[in-house]
Length: 503
Image 1: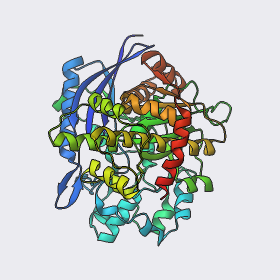
Image 2: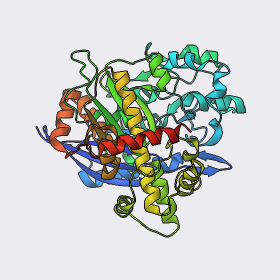
Image 3: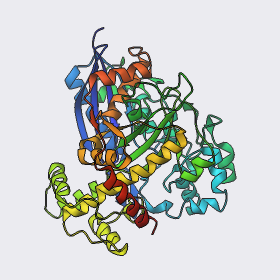
Image 4: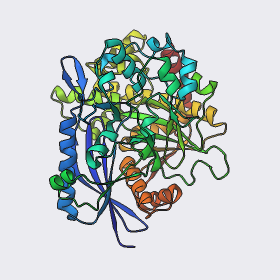
């Protein structure tokens, strides 16, 4: 088999990159072609994504790809991003406004406001999705409450990756895995939750048909070809456009959720980045009272699978500590910060990483100190002690959610796969094994880009299915195994952690 080339544009809330995948029929190799910064921009008190700048960077990366591989040879391109956020087009396919970010405060007070109209159990029964204030449903309700004219003027709602695929190809599509993050998709009916939207009095005229991962939207627009030097033969293919869907695609598990036997898997995953998405892969959505009680979610996966998971705090708290310290002139890198954390006393204090004060504070280290003081614990005195407190608390939260995964799964889970950039933090990976008492396998680091590329390869006929794709992952990228240590000390500390969190 001659080498085939696929391009993943993997866009996160803080940065994006273009990753070229070279597949020789057995192994996949990656090359980062282009990287760019991202982040919300405050305009008049509203936090927006800078869509024109992001689109310019997408095109710049495509041009850099042309410079690397020439104007022929690339088979396809696909884009993945975060979920929930969206843009609106008018009747002339003009962008009505830059998309508002999920960290904007317009959804403060939701979902509780929504429950006054439709109860929590009713919403869950219609959507099977966990309740987070920034879900697309609450963004629309906030727009309705504010009398936002875009809600009626919009003629097509496109989530963020759908916007870029439209800009690339000219075709408007609502990709399945991202559509399921809105909290107005019905997983049991396989369509938008029309009745729920009607109960809320929300318009639905801007919702289009839903497309599966692997759908080919055709070639690049002529304007994109001119701007980037790529040819008309390059196809635009939908990956799992929600970045976690692509990341879970690249989990190097031996089977696809036991779907051959109908059983639930004996492995769980954590897609670890700014957020940590922890859960199991299921052959069908799970919508029941236990899921509602635990605030778990059903999000679409690739290959007719479902990601039954919980969205929890990942590297966000650590990233914010680093940002604050470096803004003050410290200029520490992650290795230096990990060494400082390693040198601090173990299991002395904890925070509730899911508490609202850690969602978007002005100063994360100060917030950690304040939480420890307020909860009657010893106050961390150094940066290393602050960081150690944060890392151990995140690992304890992983233990909480892992137990929930086992409860929903109905069988013991033997292995936790951690994928994504957060695997570079070996301290957190080891602490996850310690806290959960389970074997932890880490890698690949570039899981999202890999999953994106391999869905394109499946669509191209170069790879048969997910099982074969995961075999390619195992053969192509390194993994590391962590086994539990000091479990008795972690078990004792967990009792204190629970008491602090529930105080």
